[in-house]
Length: 623
Image 1 (cartoon, rainbow, N blue to C red):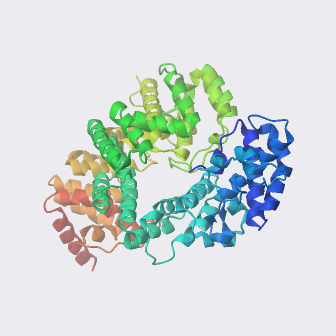
Image 2: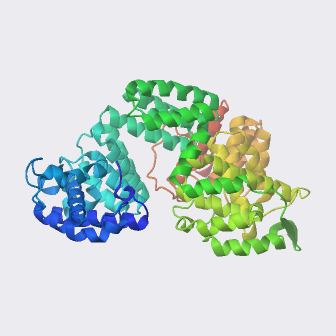
């Protein structure tokens, strides 16, 4: 369905003129104007839009006929609040009756040939109705004669325009508490969940998904499980993602969106050939379900089958964001990675270094900072919810075009990656991966011959390069690529202070792989970290050093007494958790530790019984 901003026009000014015409006619209709008044109003307004029409006519009667036909077209497709938002066709004379414009000619010889109804056939006029209707009346749409697709389209337009609260106000009345949720409301439900996400309301989002799973029909349950599968895949939990996918498939085997989800999951896991095979399977199935109805999805899957999912989604992303297509082209034509940074050392700490751009690159960076609006996340975060770079991308894209040497800069690559996080979708994956691959190549070239160099996070000049490496680690971890372990070790070597907390994840991975000696050594590098001490105690136990293990466990338990009991419990109760926050030493901290390390403890026979026995001994000693 077409949004009001998508009306075909010959330029921005032309579209605005016609949009104003529509808004006035719809607003007057909503406020109760009679059709005769609306037609007369259209004649008065016509002079303001006439010059924006593809073909102007000097004939006054023809202009009058065009104005009236445009008004009838708007009336024909406007949801009427006074008729429960049903569509009602405008009144017209009989074909052989006198035309109602007053010309004296028959309607078929006068205004009828000018009818513009087809112009608005697939055009959603509900946004104009909402503009004219008091917001407190929006709730009347729920359960009315309105097409839910029109409501979904209007709500999506609100979110795209940055007015997610309006989307919530429009959609919440469709989902009263405890009411069953029918499959025809699937689009509305999805957009309301997205609106909660845009407003930073995760609790409302989770509650709505849970309610939909409880009270929704098979279509709704499948849709929600597909959404949860996507979230699980984003978190790198592909076992959960596939389990949810198969549950969604059982709920609604013919759900078209399953095709897209399966191909995405397979591609993200690196099973590209199987993704192509499944794309071909889904093409055949969707054609049986209705080739015309699913034409867009079939075309996308055909591209996957022929070129691969990355290329298909990349092209789709470039269509939605033209600036992304230009950015991809600029990166493709960038010069080969070359060393354009000097490594300078701190005289008081020779092992400490910082990255300084060479003079030519520094001059180009001055122009870049003028063109690119700066924004960085707080502390060690890697994502931004919003970025001013997309308000007008022309200046900084022009800067990249004019100064290709900027592609040698960690700062520029970091800026672009951070900007992408604000609008990221799966289709941008090839661009993101190419940027990160270039950044890693630049860093390895720059550090060649400086094997012991350290790039402290505390030095601001080093943060772009380190943040890019952190992004690479997260991408590899999501893909379950074992290379992420090597990258974490590299990060710890570069920045031993470990501001990103990678030592915890590295320790868990080493223990799960059975590399206990390396785990013991890693714990020894961070003796003051009690979280790591529990894991090092496990490593010592697994390597046959029970005495040292008990000593290490006792020290850690004295500092964080809730963690070991949480690990040892067979079925502990999950404490209240606040998303994004952990109280150090609290029950939520202990739960997170259990989530990270329980699999490692379960890997070694006798480890958890030893832990329970050790806790009893420590308790007796304390008494």
